[in-house]
Length: 76
Image 1 (cartoon, one colour):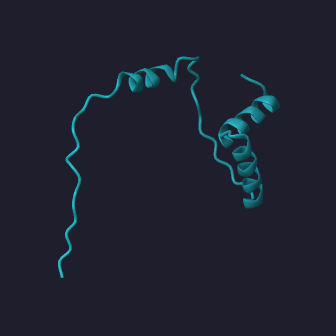
Image 2 (cartoon, rainbow, N blue to C red):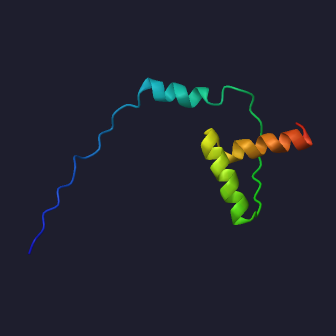
Image 3 (cartoon, rainbow, N blue to C red):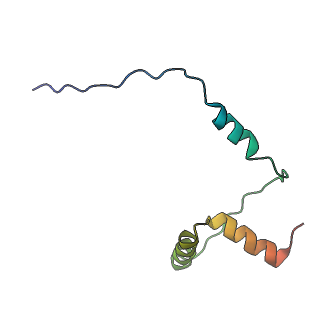
């Protein structure tokens, strides 16, 4: 028994839309601050609670935690 699989057209080398280029260039339009990565271990239940709250507010966990850390330790 043979099975035929159709493969889509070969990708083209189309130019990237100007709007995409403008977005990439503008996303770092603000002050450039060097960043460092911080990894912590937290209980699964706490992670679930944080993730749920952030999802309801439509925010990212990293943004929320950054804000909390700035409130506690200030901006250096």
